[in-house]
Length: 98
Image (cartoon, rainbow, N blue to C red; front, side):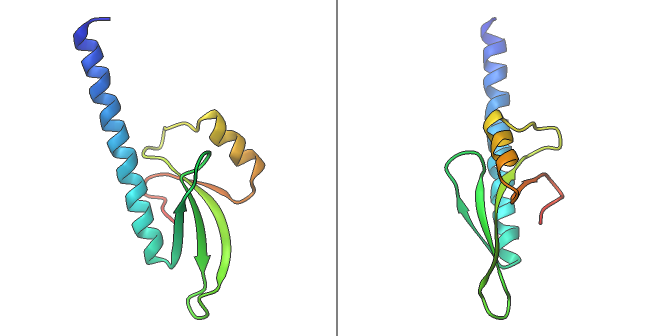
């Protein structure tokens, strides 16, 4: 593997990381608009989301959210395991927010 191919791979990985962060930030903004509060989780998902009632401001439901930056991005082993264990797990992809 030459120097050029290593640099190319590093450039692609950096772009993927940037797109993922951008997708997470845009989801967080959209969730705030719909009266949902998000909190970063440690492993297995991106956010723990709590949906609140508009009138009483009481929590309605909690769920785990995994934000993917493309339609083809696969879940990792830990994400699949977390999804299988939890009934309140949602994978969010572009243009399917909320």
